[in-house]
Amino acid sequence: MSIAFDLARVAAGFSDPTRESQQVFRKLMDAMARPGTIYDLSQAPEPPHGMHRAAGAVALTLFDFETPIWLDPGLHTEAVEGWLQFHCGAPRVAEPRQAAFALVADLHAAPLLADFNAGDAKYPDRSTTLVIQLPSLEGGQRVTLTGPGIKSEATLALDGLRPGFWGEVQENHARFQFGVDLIFVAGDRLTALPRSTRIV
Image (cartoon, rainbow, N blue to C red; front, side, top):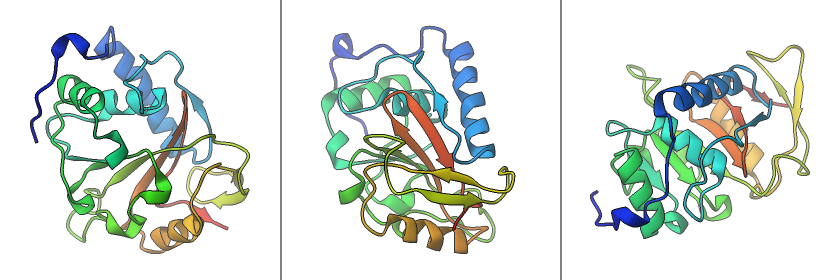
């Protein structure tokens, strides 16, 4: 979907796109490989109002003209849409199942994880990756993580989750090798839970 926007009001992106996107990409890959580990992205540029800095860094690194994105209704603003269109060129989709990436600002009002694309037998990798903004990556209900990339076990205590969310994550894991992957951000911090991670 193409929108009109004022170029002069579009916030800056990476000043050195190649180098900075590579730095963020390495941290994202580490986060996926080491579920529950928290990474700092404070060097990323300030995104438009409504987006966390870490979410903006993920968008600048992973979104492009070949990656359809679903946006939380709370992010349907000229500033956010114009910024994403100018810097990423990613087409917007209305249906969660059509999205390669989903940017969620209000988890309590967002669709269930099962409503997004879980991939299929031919293309299990073509599932949705959700980027979920939270108040904090600490201070919530503590859960134990096991699975690939975790020696013995790890813990995570995300704040601001909706009721029943960890049950959704368990159901998502039960579908492996299908399922969605999750990236959680709060301010300039990021952590990830791939579908292979088990919530105990």
